[in-house]
Length: 175
Image (tube, rainbow, N blue to C red):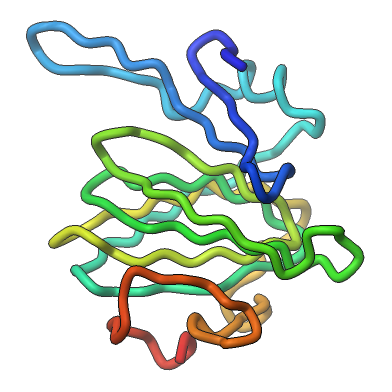
């Protein structure tokens, strides 16, 4: 489906997860695109989202962050520099897709975004020399920070996620 300045697709595995690609406008100077427009997003989303803040994470090659999430935060994620392998997993116990996951290659070359609903966890692996990952967060009430989020081991054999790495750089929380 194409909607004004954005092309919207659903994940083949997780139908609540949207892949959004903004329209690029090129000329002799380079390109320009909109990463977010409240009016456009609220027109195609069934729930109106109140995005409250943005976060950026700069990472080196072979870094893996995640799997983290909570039950109230929507995340609109993208890679604004470099290349990453993004994994999203449904952790809603009542869901038909509980513990199913999908992966997306995101890069500054393609400008794709992934909209992740509450109840899902996500993580990413840095494929390029460096990468900048962008999170746009919508939630009701106060922000749920790291200490209150769901966290799952990146290589938990019960989850069966296939990562493009064997020995990534990890923070203690992700081990």
